[in-house]
Amino acid sequence: MRRSARPDPGRYPYLADRAAPQDGAAPLALAHRGFSPDGGENTMDAFARAVGLGFRYLEIDVRASRDGVVMVFHDEMLDRVTPARGPVAARTAEELSALPVDGAGGIPRLEDVLLRWPDLRLNIDVKSDDCVEPFAELVNRLGAHDRVLVASFSDRRRRRVLRLLDAPTASSAGMAVNALLKVAAPLGLAGPAGRMAQVQALQVPETYRGVRVVTRRFVAACHAAGLQVHVWTVDAREDMDRLLDLGVDGLVSDAGDVLASCLLDRAAGPLSSPPSDE
Image (cartoon, rainbow, N blue to C red; front, side):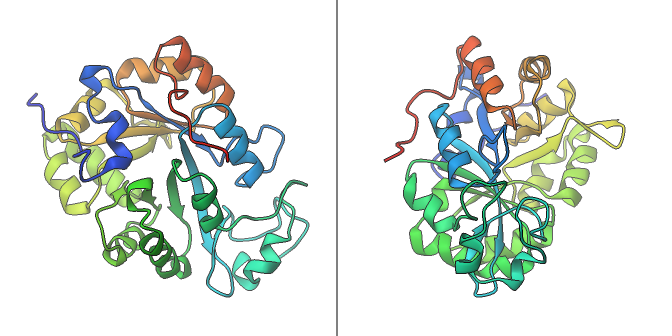
């Protein structure tokens, strides 16, 4: 199979750490909603714990408050992890910031995360349509294009964000484009499809509804098309080793301690040049 260029590390610095896997580049290790084994996902405490483990990449989720502030939170409703009820979008940023998450700190503003850890890279799932414009405005204002990857299960929403950004920004496919590229990859068509969809990475589960997505052939075809493959959510050590042996470019995990140990054992840990916690 013909080898294609990897995503240009000059154009997409977010992906530069894995730009040349054939030269031994370490896989990307992404702490899923930070590291929160005892609860408190997507909080500053969870992010600080991940940074403390040496992670340079976090996978997080964002929604907009009632007053248009980009907040880091996964669910549409507050009920699962806070003492409040109802939608995130019904409350102001100040109100959301005061809500404890599983007893931990309040819901953080994305801007505060970006400013606290200026070297941290964020894989950001844009969860709601009302978050598109304030999210793009924030990234443009802070010049954070090299530090974020735009993700969304909705390819329509993801592409809306990309159209509003004023500099090249890495992006991963949503559900529809993932399905298209799964079919296109064995046919050698993943490269044109990926460029048309404006993606540089596929972020996929190992299996989906009983269908195996991540195989050695699939990974090789994506690499030949210049696309990285990141797999979520991988928590067992044996699964991490098996997927890394297949050549995947990144792993998203809730078990940050296990993933850090795995990569250190493989001499490919995330612990080189960790971001400052100052």
